[in-house]
Image (cartoon, rainbow over all chains, first blue to last red; front, side, top):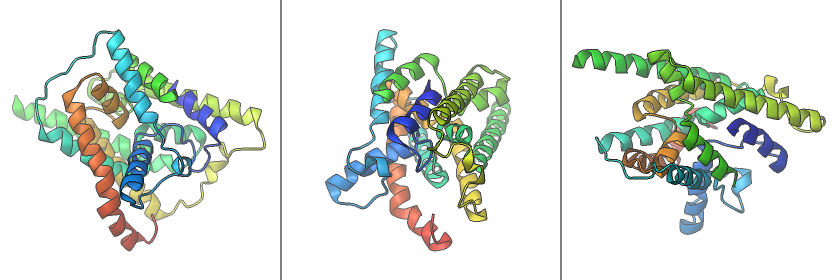
Length: 145
Length: 138
């Protein structure tokens, strides 16, 4: 469904530059927050061509849709936090590395399906990173035992 | 509206584009990996249909000769992907999954999103300047 939307977005909104821009966990939140910052504080943060006049609210929609789904499945309730600092640091790091890469792991797949070779080093990097992190997780679990 | 539908379905499927690889490498579990493959197949099918309907428009697969693919670009994208993969596994999922989890009430994901949005601003205010100074254009 997500993949199909990415393709449909290319058709409806002529989202070809940058390519396959239908969904991205980095560029869409960036455009949204940059739009707000540029309007409120007159900053000059990067905006894609699609959000020059109106903000891209894909992730507001995703949050709304997920909340609706969780509510209908009776899964909507606050869950406790085992660690407070770690998630903030991880989020900060993911945003910075994602911004460096220029797209998220979902859009990397879309770009690859679109035939954009820029997705290849990104996907190789992501899969290598996941492998390294898995090794680390296994090692830390062994160390605990 | 599309975001609403995607968010709804994402919450139901528990999909995650990073956890798919993680579960496969750690447990040989292919459930989430199938969602990743599904996204790719869905996108490919969609682009192919679009290309069929509008044969004179779009760059579908013509990009196999992607312009601007220099060594610096490849290196930066690879390093970005590497860090993204490592920290996404440690965080427990990709940014989209974190948005979905936060919407379902996970305080951990809410904290993640605070760091995530702060990171987006930090990158543009601090890191981007260094990258432009070192590599010229990014």
